[in-house]
Length: 291
Image (tube, rainbow, N blue to C red):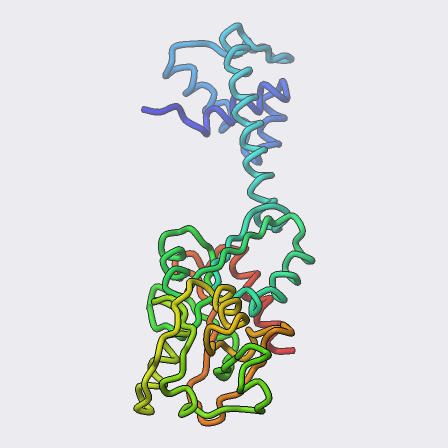
């Protein structure tokens, strides 16, 4: 038998108040109920924790030692309550995001940090496959994926959908054009993202559907590496229209006959979705989408 928390709670209340009656009032119990819990404690262990008379309740030597322990026990209970309340009110805690493209989620993160400055927010970037692995491996609380995903284990929130955009160096022969067509990419040296990148997968599927051939100039790991490779003239790159950003070295070119769009979907594990920090972040994003 483990020691009864109810009996310890009754003992502690009597020790603090110096009275069974006041202890009963504090615990919202009857005085006989408190007396019964303390008596059961004494009987089970064969000890006496209080000297009792009609006007005074005093701790015995055993009672003094037990009171030292229960003070620590219930101080820790208060600390645990305070700590959990901090998390409940989001005055402390941590939120880890794994994203394929920070640009899509940063405005929401900024708003979240402004409202809840006590939360430590961390953002890690990777391709869509790696981001998903981090989420399922509990290395991230929320993931931003470059595709729509059907998985009962996930709670999903579609964030945006953007067209595919080609981009070239400022001195490339296409730099003065307003747009291109998919056929222009046929057998053209392309800067390709790594396997697992949705940018590469979408480009390959779109080209294959159109019966066009991909000619790889170089394969690079990550969006920034692709930008740098294109900027120095190694080939033509492809990106989501919102991800090119502002770079005087590069020129973005809409692909007018491209049907494929890049979707961005915010997801978390459904088993974790009731956590206050996650529901708060998702609700904040929904507010932003509705504006």
